Length: 295
Image (cartoon, rainbow, N blue to C red; front, top):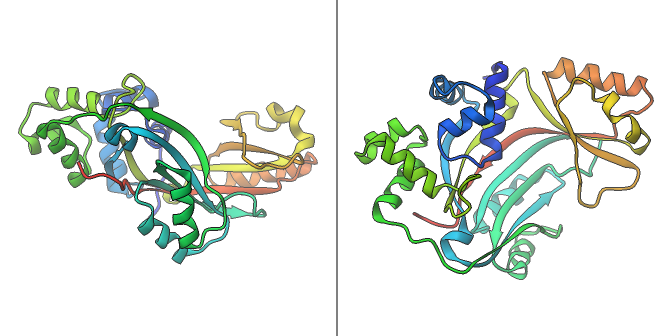
């Protein structure tokens, strides 16, 4: 099943993907849609199958305290059995990104984001699973004290994960509280821009491949195009990437397209301009695993 989305719903998906929000009102602000329509848009995305149930993914550094790091494990070959082993073996697995890659082996097909307290322990798990690539540290954390949760707060987070809901009025029915109480608790418990002490991150699995009129791509273009990026990407939502291990011959850029026709037209434009793309990685799925702690 596929569908087309308007600009507001696409912006909403991008906000859901990036995290940093606690309640639907935050999403409405980030996506520049009205607060009156946010609940209906979220329900429509769930109904269309573009997003799955929401999860309160545990933020392990705050829950367990101590020194932690967030790592990304990159797989450059499609190996479903290896991916299954990693999902089973990585105890602090947060999410995985799955790409459709063309014309290059330099973009990962799958990236696993996970928490670990020691790089050595993570490397041992990866070697046992058969991963050759070294994990890349994304961020490090040092929490001297773990956050203490009340029974009511644990129940609320468990309810998010069992129902897949984030709308306060719907959660309130399950926990038998007022929506205002639910909203206040979510702002305290969820990691977002105004709350660095949160214990969870609100995320949802996103099936990007089901959207007909949106493609998010990472593109490698020749280094000679460096001075003409603004011209070559005019009218597009794009940004230059700092890609680990990137060669000096290409530039990595992330860019959004309005579907396959728009993507093919732009690819031809670059080829005619003398800068044929060296490879593409297109967002296919973003899967939330949320392993490592039971609230």
